[in-house]
Image 1 (cartoon, rainbow over the protein chains, first blue to last red):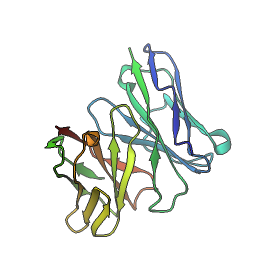
Image 2: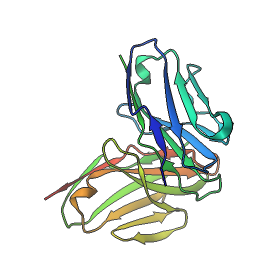
Image 3: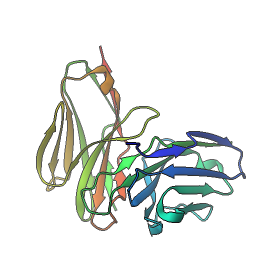
Image 4: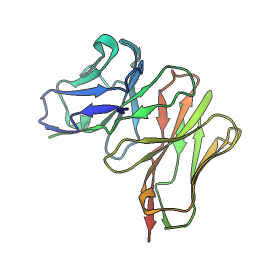
Length: 115
Length: 112
């Protein structure tokens, strides 16, 4: 069974440009999460989807970040316009449902470098 | 909020044992995860503890003391492939499931 897959694995863009990251959760997982790790810091929560609905977006840094999950399958995270401080690794994760104890599976991350 | 502390780096010899400690402060504890992450790869689930005590899975064991806000991950019979970053993450009842608070990770270096 395929795990959580993310695309692209690496992206280098100029400040002011737009980047869209994609995440395909494990098939059948209703819950999808975005996390981010910036240089020298710990992994931090961005937001949580249950199917196509945003359950919690308290970690989104500002309105330059837009996450969508149309149809409740894959999700995209768009950064527009990108700033230097947006550089980091963006992880996607998924779980079967929202019950406590459900294993949360992570993807390999999308490395974003803004120059 | 939560505050999660774990050592930055630990070095051990192949075949030895290493214990990675994690202390946390949280309002409404709802479980602690350990993940293993090799460079450039996905964090891989190792364990989840929500009750006090020791859980063993092969060479890896995880311990939790809720009263002390303390957990450790024990790696036995170390192998070179165990060189990786080990992440401690806490879930809180004040947050939705899946909203984890991570420590900065402990880089374990296994030497021959």
